[in-house]
Length: 161
Ligand SMILES: [Zn+2]
Image 1 (cartoon, helix red, strand yellow):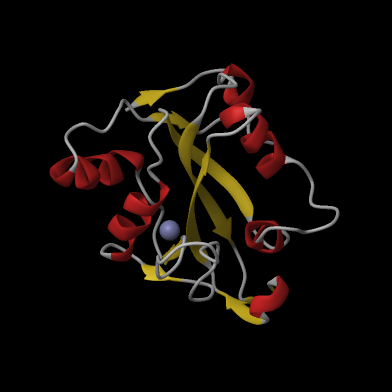
Image 2: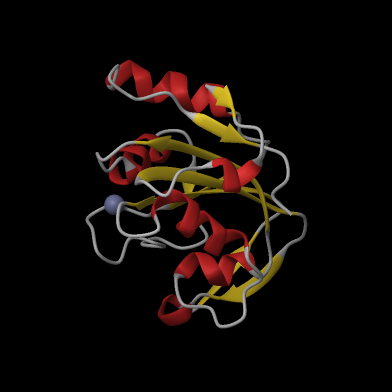
């Protein structure tokens, strides 16, 4: 794992996969588009995605850090009540998001709803809840056990706001 200095702007516009860690400090309810109302608990949410098209990682992560005006994706709704704390990502043409969702399902609880962020795939969800602050190194170690070919993970922990 490499701590990336310079935030999202230091990322390339080439493709990659990412995890957002989002912090919720209160117990609240939020409507998540067609999934309907869901409870958001105090703790952390881990959301996985990939950006393999135009704009790449930098373009997509800029979107995830911008103020939410008109929510479109499920994650936009969750962001209305959470703060993005860290970004973990790999620069790689291979799509890792479903593999990572499968890994997170063994470490965390699918939340705030089943199928969150996973409308177009077979994953249980692309978002998971943990009560204590998640650590990038723990996640990397868990993924590497099954996938030693995982590229270097970049962790952005500063300058996200
Ligand atoms: Zn999936």
